[in-house]
Image (cartoon, one colour):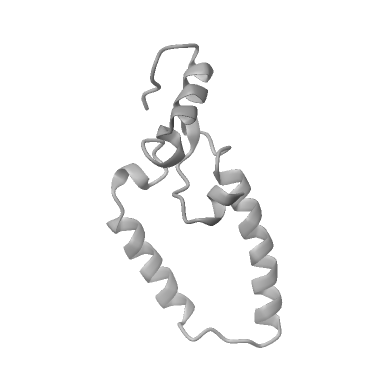
Length: 98
């Protein structure tokens, strides 16, 4: 879970949302439940939701393409990530996004 909590990009190994995204999504689902409780308790955010969404879009657009869930960055290009991808495709030294 450490890799999901340290801000590592969610770039799927072999182009599949198994590593690390599934665990990260589980963590954020739990956070969403806490956020719902906080909102229902009447706690208001300092920054309006529309502004948060706009800034998230700006950040996403400013990121290099290799870090945008393309399987060309993050854990997808680690030695183990490449080995998993090669096994899934039936061999070869390095997996390439088609």
